[in-house]
Length: 184
Image (tube, rainbow, N blue to C red; front, top):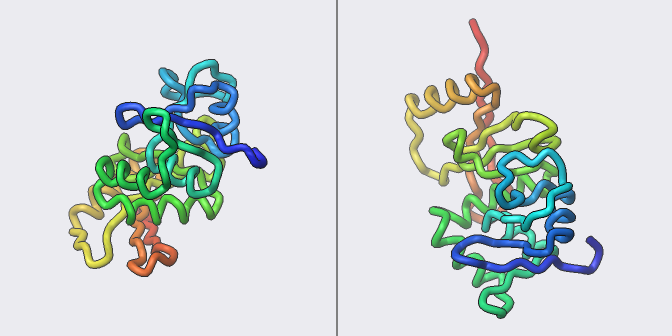
């Protein structure tokens, strides 16, 4: 996507790429967003606008691949982050993890259906099942044994690795703790 940032619009809390071809290009680039009305796209050959999660939009703006407009005015990155902070609790910490995983080459999607912050793919949705579910925990935040067991059992049931990501207060790379379960 050399040189040309994709234009998107912030509409009632949603980030929408109206230009179908540009939406396809973003989707092909890294499985960003979801085609409107298509919960499990099989390919990038869709003919509808692309809806981005705001965390994806912040990342794409930061990378220079996206410009977000609201009421005809281009939003600065810090304005977009302000919107994201209204939607996501602990946005900056979750974003630090999202950005780190993306930069490591993983495909990162919302993990709400698994009761986590992110579902993480090596290859991409539709090509594999997400091997990891990631829960972001703040430094110093307690986690009970029951929460670990509950999350681990859920992850095992859906054949995923349960991972806790702890953002670094200094903004450096997060720490990841991966739980692997096996039968004794």
